[in-house]
Amino acid sequence: MRVLYVEDEKHMALAVAQVLKKSNYSVDLAHDGEEGLDLALSGLYDIIILDIMLPKLDGIAVLSRMRQEGIETPVILLTAKGETEEKVRGLDSGADDYLAKPFQIEELLARLRALGRRKGYLAQGSMLGYADIELNYNTLDLYGNGQTFHLTLKESQLLELLITHQGQAVTNSIIIEKLWGWDSEAGDSHVQVQVAFLRKKLRLLTSRVKIKTIYGVGYMIAPGEEGRADV
Image: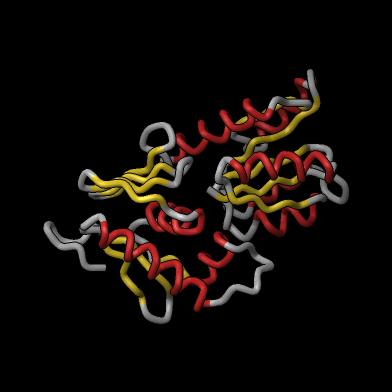
């Protein structure tokens, strides 16, 4: 999953982001409310961690604007310890959860997992299933037909993105921003390479799951036909 973390305390933000990345989350950082809002409105994120006390635009204002613009991305609001009024304002403004600062990183990870399950990304624990395959996005292992293959982080992120957008064509630009970041210099050729690697792993599993090329747009995952492993 891709996470946006909006936090003006840069040392804290970098430390938390490092832990999240080790847990196989993709993380983008913003250090003020205006930057956070711009990124949030892109609709690229699966979950947003949003501090209330931010320069330029506070977290409540960012959250309210997101909801006004139709961005329904789940939000964990970071509040000051014991500030009940902030928690109430945040929940009334559309927050999905809140966490009092300072917090334990294990609790933040638990909240992220809970929101992921609520949104339907996780079938059970860290497993994400589709057709005849299952992906453990924590260990990066792909299971199917009694076999297991280890994926690279980007292969796992690509497969997760396609599964969570099943029935939709995912554009190259969205894939690039999800896998490499919005400020990356990666291009369509980088996407093609990752798709080719993932297709190869699916063939090795003799999975019937297909990654269909939607010319001029991007890619879409499909269950394929029983007994066929073409992609």
